[in-house]
Image (cartoon, rainbow, N blue to C red; front, side, top):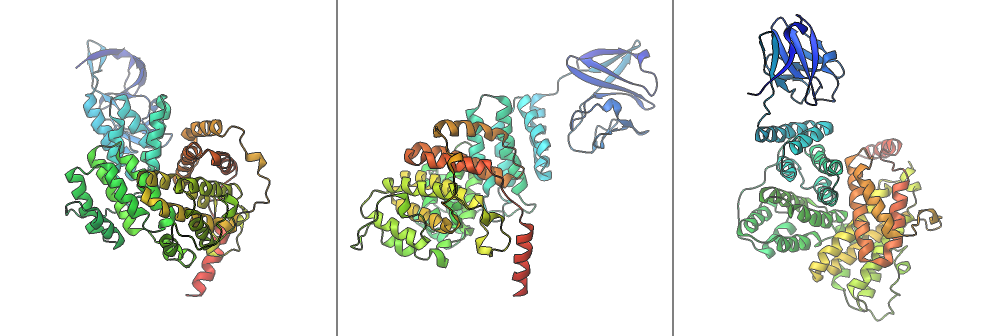
Length: 523
């Protein structure tokens, strides 16, 4: 023990309190009928002075700001979450001493990680931040905390991976690009806290069977929506050391086998593998298991009437019907239905390389986002099919970024990637008004605009994780695509600028009430 003198005993009369400073820390001494106690004066919740708290006869100290309660005799936190630091105390020769021995850092790190689990269960953003700050203070591996949150959450997503894991990849990247410790902590908190919100209370365990890796069998299992078989094959791949690039190739083919989950399958595939590359083996495997479950459960929108031409268009890739192909310009595809948009892309495919078609489609998607008719977002009298908002347009940009990455690694995926991007453009065509004056949103220097916008992500100010996730993923995707497709950079910057500058309507009380009354009336 390391005993430090803190006060003369005569300064502590029965029932009195005294705050002393030891090094830079405030320590509260309390003289009670049960003895003398010492603890930190700052409440571990928000730092308010416990000297102003209420002390019961049984030595329960209450912080009157938020009613957190600490039993000084037992060391238990009775109401609240974080533990209060207490100090052994003794009186010798009329002097008060406390044990100032620093706790074992390894024990503090282990406690911070264990308490992080509780904070995740409670979806307590502030406590998650405090526990991660404690872990960092005591020399902990911050990515170990991210891995722990993933292992805690991965089987709580009933239908597989959500935006929480997808945006975690971007938050980790943002953390790595900053040298500011506050921004680095904030980025990690945003990633971890979203997992706590999205994870359910019930666990949905994954099958434990293992099968030797077979890429064709894996694709067949996903196609058959056979989670057990797909998981067994994935486990076999991980056990036999199949590399992440090979797995990304198989996962990418599964994601683009259909126009599915309105592009989320491809976005999740890229983000999951980016995240997995930064994690230890157990956490990386957990992310990939969650992704496989998401691919199994993904909706297949190419089976909907609006997109049913997709299979035929894919078979027709690279063929010409004898008609003159339209010019390779964004205006040639804008304003068309999904079927017509896919038809235009098929015509282009007979005469142009996919790498030349992609920037045109990306520019068209950016133009649609820039000219989104926000009256559709505000109206209350539309049909359920017309429940369109900003996030529907951000998906096309994020999807474009994901499929470019997948197709550059596996060129055989270009037809699916471009046709599905055409599906986005056709789907959103109805909700665009190009008569709007958008000059106010244009940036003179797109690269500088994106650099400045990325810096603002650390303190985005958005209350909902689902919205901040789209904000982060879309901004980073647009920045990457502006560099990859310079001809689209201006439209991308203007579209992002307008999105960031205008309010996003998230709750549609009147629209939902009317639509659901009409819906249930027909049951």
